[in-house]
Amino acid sequence: MTDIKKIYETEAPVCFNLGLSLDCGQAFRWEYQDGRWHGAAFGKEVYIAQKDGRITFWGADSGDFESVWRAYFDWDCDYKKILDSYDDKYLIEAAKQYGGIRILRQEPWEALCSFIISQNNNIPRIKGIIGRLCGCFGEGDGLKSFPSPERLAVLSPDDLAPLRAGFRAKYIIDAANKVASGEIDFAQIDRMPIEYGREQLKKIKGVGDKVAECALLYGFHKIEAFPVDVWVKRIMAEMYPGGLPECARGTEGIAQQYLFHWRRMKDRQDNK
Image (tube, rainbow, N blue to C red; front, side, top):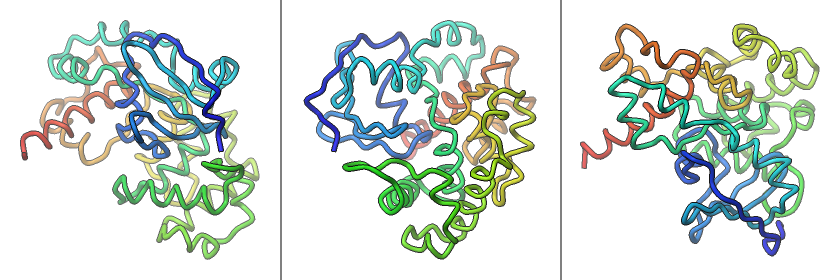
C-alpha cells in the first residue's frame, strides 16, 4: 500500500483540471474517493487532489513528481497557447467549458491494452476488466501495477477467463505476444511519424483505426492522432462535415478530447 504520509504539493499549471483529465474517458484506473483521486501509473500508486490552484499528492515526494507525474499530466505543455490558437466557434465553446482537460502521457502498453478492452464496452465494464487484469496479474501491494506484456505473453486466452473480457481476451494475448517479442517495437513507434505507428499497431488482432488512434494519442502522445467513436462521428456529421477546421491542425487529438467531452455532456444535459 502506498505511504500516504508522504506528501508533495505544488501549484497547478494554467489550464489544468484534475478531475476532468482523469475522468474524461482516456484512462481507466482512477477513482474519486473522499475528495481525492486514487489511482496508479508507471507502477506508482497515489492519491491526488486539486484545491485553490494547488495540487496535492499523497504517496509521492518531489522525486516521484519529477520522474512520473510531471510528464504523466503533461505539466510543461502550454495548453493556453493551444487554446488561444482555436478560432472556430464550436472549439472555442468546448474549450471554454472543458479546457482544463490535458492529454495524459500514459504508459504505451497500458494505453494499448486498455483501448483493446474498451471495444464495444462501457466505462464501468472497462474499469472492471482492467481492475481484474491488474488484480490477477499485476505486482505489488495495494493497487497492483498494470501487468507487463511479458507477464501476459506466457498466458493463453483461457487464462484470462477471470477477467470476463469475452472476445477481447484473445486480442490482449496477441498484443502481449507481439509487443513482448519485439515484433511491435514501441521505441520505433515513438520515434517515427504517426503513419508508421498506425501501420504497426494494426498488425495486432482486433486493433483497428480507433484503437490504434487511441493508443497513439494517449500512450505515445502523438497529439495529431484523431480517435473516432460514435460521439466523434456525430460531431463530425453535425459540425464539421468537411473535416476539422484548419486551426486544429497538429493538435487534432486535443481538439477531439474537448469536443468529445463537450458533446457528450451537452447530450446528457439536454436529456435531463
